[in-house]
Amino acid sequence: MADRLASIHGTEQDRVNCPFYFKVGACRHGDRCSRQHNKPLFSQTVLLNHMYQAPNSTTVQTGPTSMGTAADDVPAQEHFDDFFEEVYEELESFGRIEELNVCANLGDHMIGNVYVKYEEEEMAEKALTALNGRFYAGRLIMAEYSPVTDFRESRCRQYEESSCKYGGHCNFMHIKRPSRDVAKRLGIKTQIEPAKGGGGFGGGGGGGYGGGGHVREGD
Image 1 (cartoon, rainbow, N blue to C red):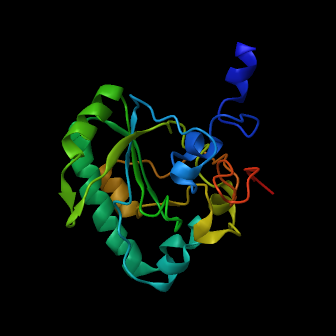
Image 2 (spheres, one colour; image 1 turned 90 degrees about the vertical axis):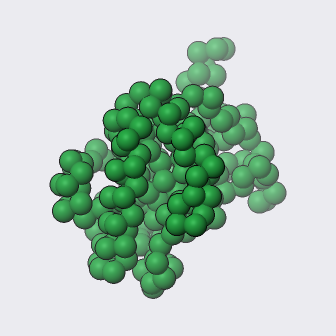
C-alpha cells in the first residue's frame, strides 16, 4: 500500500495531493483547491512570487505561445535581460545557482513568478531569510520554499517545441529566457534538457471550478 501511494504521489491518480502544486509550485485554485498543497519546510528551490513585472506590450499582454518567438519583442527582451542579470547576480550572493527560471505565463497564480534553485538547501535557506521583507522595484518580495526541483516536469513541452494552444494561460511553465549575451556573461548554459510537461489548462482539484479536478497534461 505504501509503495503504491509513493508511486502515485503528485500524479492525477493521487486524490489527496494537488499534482499541479507538486509539479509547478502553483495552482490556479489556490486555497480553494480540493487537494492538498504540501508546502515544504526545506527545499533547494525558492519561489519569489510575482517578482518580475513585464513592460506593457502586445506580446506580453497576450503571452508568447512559443519559446522561439518570445524574444521577437525586442524592447520587452531588453527589459527582461536587465532584470534577469540584476536578480541573478544578487541571488548568486547566497550560493551557487543551478537554475533561475522566470515565468512568462499570465495566470494570476503564475504571472511574474521567479524560481531559483540552489545547489544546496542551506543556500536556499540563506536566500529566503535574507530576501523576505525586502523590496524590489518598490514592491515587497514574497519568498517561500517551492516543492519544484525538477523543472523538466514543470515546463511546457508544447511551448518549447512548437506552439502552446493555451498561450499565456497554460498551467505549465512558459519560461522566459535571457539573451545569449546575458547568458554568456553570467556563465549560464543555453542548451536545456527537453521539457516533459504537457500544455494544459487543467489544474489541481475541484476548488469551486466545477469539481472533478481533471488535469490535462497533454493532447
